[in-house]
Image (tube, rainbow, N blue to C red; front, side, top):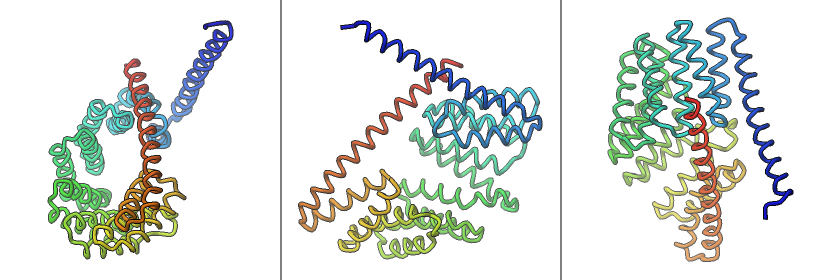
Length: 343
C-alpha cells in the first residue's frame, strides 16, 4: 500500500537523483571552466586529451560532451589538427558505449582531416580505431582492409620514426585477422615480422605480445613444440614491474597447450600457477579459462571431486561475468540514450 512513508522514500530518492545529476553537471562545468581558462590552443588541446584518457572508461558520456565542446572550439579557431583530435576523442567515447555507427562517423572524419594534413602516424591510429569498430561489428573484410591500409602507410613512411614505431603493432593486428581466418602460415610469418621489428625498436611489450599470439597460431596449427618454444621466449621477456599480469596470461595459455599435448601434469602445474596470479590480480576472465582447463584435467584423470569443485567455481564466475556484462549493457544503453537526447 502506498502511504506517507512510501511517499517520503520516493521524495528522498528523487531528490538524491536530482542532486547526483546536479553534482555531475557541476563537476563537468568545473572541468570545462578549467580547460577553457587555458589560453594556449595547443596546451588546451593536450589538456582536453589528457583528461579524456583518464575518464574514458568510467565516464564516456563526459568525454563525448567535452569532446563536442572541444570540437566547436577547434572549428571556431580554424585549427584542423585540433578538430581531428576532438573527432577522435568523441569517437572513442561512442566506442566505449557501443554506439558503433557514431564512433565510425567521427573516426572517419578524423581520418579525413589527418589525410588532408598528411599526418601519417595519426592516419595509422585512426585506421586501427576504425578497424576495431569493424571487428566489433563482425565486418572482417572491412577490418582487414583498414589494417592493410594502415600497413601500407607504415611501409611508405618507414623513414618517419613516429610512424615506424607503429609498424610492429599493425603487423600483429593484421596477423591476428589471418589467424582468425585459419590462414596460419600467413599469420605466423606476419607475427615473425612484428617480433623482429619490435625487437629492433626496443619494444619488449610488443615483442612479448606478438610471441604469445604466434604461439597461439602455432598451437592452432598443431605445431605444439614450436608453440611451446615460442611461449618460453615470451615468458623470458616478462618484466618484474609487470606484477605477474603477463606471467599469469602466458601460464594460462601454456596450461591449455600442455593439455592439448596430453601432458596433464604440466598442464595442471601451469593452470594452478595462473590461477594463483589471477586471483591475486582479480583477472576474472582469466580465471574462467583456468577453471575450464582444471575441470578438463581432473575429469580426464578421473579425479571427480576436484573436477566438481572447479566446475562449481566455473559456474559461479560465469554468473559473475554475465551479471557484470548485463550491468555494463544497461549502463551503455543509458549513456547512449542520454547522449542522443542532447543531440
